[in-house]
Image (cartoon, rainbow, N blue to C red; front, side):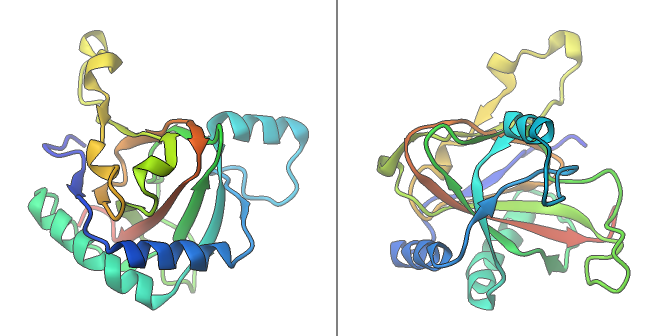
Length: 210
């Protein structure tokens, strides 16, 4: 799908104290290695682990506390309206508290799947990811690298130039910034070259094509 706005940003809207509270709360939980689709099983072979690390290298903690959603949901709704997407959505998945340490990254990907969730009896059954949100918890002075970039891919292959069409979200850099985007937009987090970048990601679901 083509979008006039491939993302919508709110600079420094989350109070620093809230960002610190989420970081401290996330650090109290046991972290796990982040995976991508196809690598969900616990025991990966050396070859599978190598392939995973070529795509994604970060550590995460899952959080599902209502006080976190309460702070973020208003920005999702505002972005959905302001950007002109106007998607119908009604459920948020667990929040992903993510640590990008030295040399960690997440290469090009999109958050949506090719078909709805098939989880009978679960609230997400029959739903698809529509809106993704990433929240900057770190101060940009705490790390280098870790750029958030988007690739709308709305150009014919013979006219497409990644040097021109890749969009860097500079608005995400200040602590407390929130960036919302359609879940089918391709994006990446470039490698962190020093320090640690902490972020919070939430995927928001609805019925297909509504």
